[in-house]
Length: 500
Image (cartoon, rainbow, N blue to C red; front, side, top):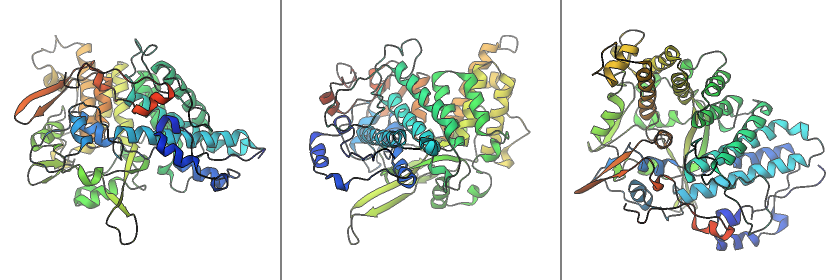
């Protein structure tokens, strides 16, 4: 290399951490830093280019997969405030601030890798690592902008406040940042994604821990779905599965999963060898331990509404369990607890989280087909999904979803002559959303569908009136950490009171 690069532990300190933490970092001596002078060390650093924060706890609590399950024993600020759409001040794992911090740490790691490659004597030798770093940087910014900014709307994105898009390593504690606009952030995400994807080479020992080409195309599918560029959604779904075998790579809920107990189900669901897991990440999280005991969780009635009241009928292959016949759930998470020392009773919980899956690619393509007016293709994808999520004994025929079923389920008051293509399109999109809501239960992704389709959310409150989050409510946008004002970044606007 032309010169060695150091991992400065103060990177993004001003943006992601408080001053006291920065001061500790500044005490670190240069000879304790890692020197990026070979491919192996770059690979080690790339492991840190994926956010280790978990967004599921607050995303699930804000959405419509939960209700006031009064009597459940676990109450914490993250679950409670998120359910009421109040700002969460907690900074520990599973909080929005923790996710913000860890996403920018991941971006800092990606930037260090990119800088080291740029200064290498033979940068072409590190092309694959450059590709992974670019896509990882794009992903972290993508998650941040969709959580901490107004959701992408082509009519307003050029003026909506975005988030800082950080492209170089930082070697100073305090630096001024610009929030950019949502449109600018999306442009930079697309630039990094399209530049990095062709460089990726699939030679990883454990592919699902990295942005392989398949995982990167799955990311592109989500990105273009959120942006509303539907031809590219279809194209990247095809690139992810060029053999046309998306359905064959779904989780086999009608096979081995049907025989599992809850722990084995969760363990297999998040395994790196599960073919449906295109990208998984290790996160520090209490989600697997607490989600069933949270006060704001899923009841029997709500679980039935989500998994049984669909255009295809009951998705009977989706497994559910319960606690005391009150909290109902599907088990997708296992905690790995690491003690602080051999004899300690305290420690840190870790969860593996699927970030991109085969099922998401399939359902995203179905929604894109519907938006493009390719209704037969959309129905084919939806039927492919339904066949894999309904027990064989309950599945009748090769197609449970057709034009007439869409009409009778969503538009039962319309005759065949009154039923238009516009109705069919809307019904197919609603079918996609139904399936996505059931499939990604307890994974946090429903919140993003609520944002992009401007779905109102009503939460019940025990012994009180329900509360509703309207489509344009400012509280749909998470608040930035208060510390960012030290870098002259403005916070997100809020209603006059959090209870409005």
